[in-house]
Length: 272
Image (tube, rainbow, N blue to C red; front, side, top):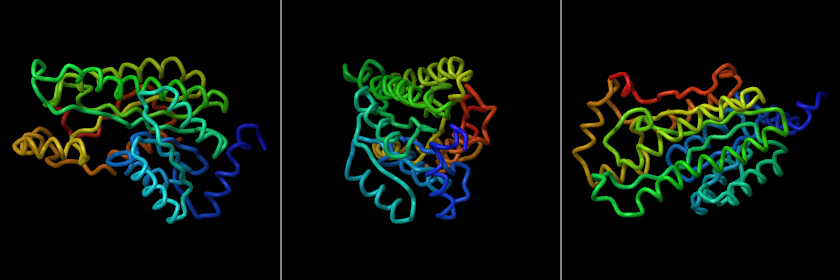
């Protein structure tokens, strides 16, 4: 048994015994922002594909319920209550993944925050800092600790969740657009630096997706749903699982030659 294979053997054995035949069999994956929306959908999809997951978010009740659901379905899952804006919290979450599953092979840095869309001059003074702390510092914290863990076992795959707002200006707040552009920049920087070490870093850029954030926004701006539907060739709002499927593919060995890319999952929004 090779040195690479040995640490992953318990995960592989568990996956085969449970009948899993997915693209993430034998992999340990960490998912942030996992209490709802895209993150919760990713937890289900990653588990379906054979991964043992460590779920991270600030809301324990939702994390605990989702973890229990996944375990009841025969999957390997645990959760860590953490704020990605705090480096020590992220370090604790990554350590939990390594301690429980022996390694960290994949990470989906999905946690995000957005203030209600308003003109820049009407935003609260803390809108910029609050958004950047989660969306940019959070990804920075996550990648640094995830990369440290992956370097010890010969590599892995990281997917950062950006947005169509990271590619073009969309009808959201300026701090959100700035933060999601920054995520793509950090993704390219890390991809270039760590590809020689066997760590693939990519990003996804989801379009309008059913989530707590967008549902809250649409409640206060109901006219915007028609604007969103008309903005893309595929005129509908995505289900969170559709975004999770893209993240799973990028984390899998099937995307083995994909490095430093930003995959648009937006119904064609950015084609126009």
